Picture: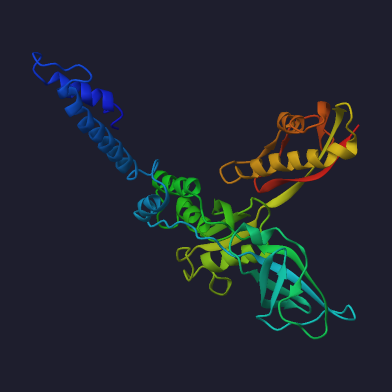
Length: 358
């Protein structure tokens, strides 16, 4: 905004206003008197530009962006705690019941037992907020000794923990809110409300999907994978509680009967003829190839909410594979046995099945 108000421009303007009969050359008394003032003014204009940027959504960051979003009733999503499944067995290998509140450590984090699911199966909440609680799976050690406990395992992610919402993500929600004008149960209103629920990474809204007054919400998890049954149930309870469906007891308007479903995975098998660089074997590169293809699928899933359907493209798979060290070339690539791009259903996201090389 004030880019033209540089030190040189300000000093030149100040010197130009001095009578030409005086010495204005660098090193003169007038030049030396005006230069510090020009430098200070340039700093002030720079600060003014930064202050102005803090008032606009596309340039504001941190607490300034929080304040801007709050003008539309939008708050930055706080970090959330991962909800995990825990399996517990006694010394004889039989399922064992554990008292709520007991704490277990694993992977450098602590998980507290919060709710029973069935005999020997419980929900545990990671005490550390954020995505860190989603990563570890394996053995658990009780913080305090538990008589008769033979084995404890941390299993599935029921609701993924999320880090605090980034500036980029909050800015997208804010600008989307302005552009779409959410109001009174329209599609934009549903998207705004559902995307604010912890654990949700995106939603597709299908109005009147089963007749007038019905709404279907299909959600994806915050890590852009298939949502757990617990997350689907959470969205349903917040938007339109099952026991009072259609009665406006949730965030959905009165008369809207809301059905919530999760995005489902489509298994994608990839085959190709891989040419390896000298000194590499299939065992050396296969794991990295799978990781590269999974990264592409994850990137693709991030666009699921705004896409009518996703397309798994041969060219993108080949590009991902060619980035792997040890791969010289790739030919005859096929997706599920066909040498063509694959269109997924509207509620489908890609999941890697197998990668085979000729």
